[in-house]
Length: 291
Ligand code: FVH
Image (cartoon, rainbow, N blue to C red; front, side, top):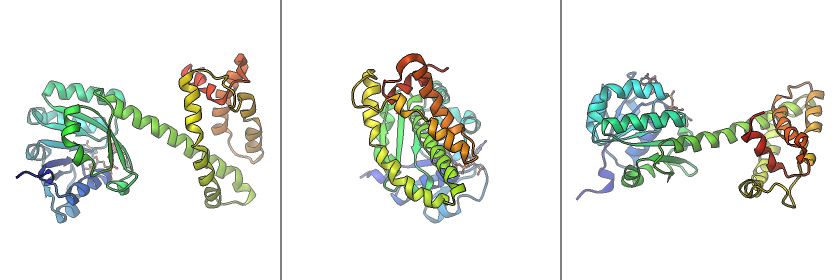
């Protein structure tokens, strides 16, 4: 009888992430073939039961399910273009970070080659793979997602976002946009308090519970953005949100004001257009219509 963990899989790319993905598959009992451009990265995985092969072509031929986790879009083409014929009839899951346009281009390339294509956006660092908190967003072939979802779940929570192969990447990059701007805000705050003698570590201990509590406002802001009525009562107004004091205090501390200037510009554009009493959520109009 074929059981689920009999599903054979090949992993192309044994960087930090590809190695973590392959290790999770081996732990779940999947026969796993691995390949990496440079030699010497498969040792630990072979110790865990992987079959290491010398060429990407051998890896592709070894399994119907092929996972690519390479550096970028160009490296995916570099590895797979010569293997289009061998990939025909197989399932390609590309977990390499690409732009939405690049993911769609790869999906079109795969369709031309007769390959079932699923794109993935990994919302985890390698150490999180197979652990609580790891999740991967998928879009592209619904058939591939349904067929292999139990295998994908070995890496983290798997969610499917439609047949447009670019959407997993778009959602991935949108989440990263939120993360990086939050990190920049945290680092700005740490730089503000440093001249007063507070270490970044001490500031982190103050900032983490505060910022965690503030995520509760996401849904309130989202309700206003989705409804499109920025005059709804109970919101913090744009005039109240003016970052003038924060910009001045940053300047007084002798640090760059670039991070807070960016938010202040979005707010000011709406105030200057006569919307100062509207809620903070209105800055989405500044973002939608670049100045
Ligand atoms: N690491 C992370 O935290 C993030 C989490 C979110 C998703 N990313 C993306 O995952 C892709 C792989 O990331 P990685 O962490 O494994 O990256 P590296 O450790 O730098 O390994 C890169 C692998 O790609 C191979 N490679 C590079 N160029 C080529 C090429 N032209 N042909 C064939 N293979 C290539 C490289 O091989 P080698 O240098 O060892 O020979 C590594 O196997 C990535 O898109 C992240 O954005 C990870």
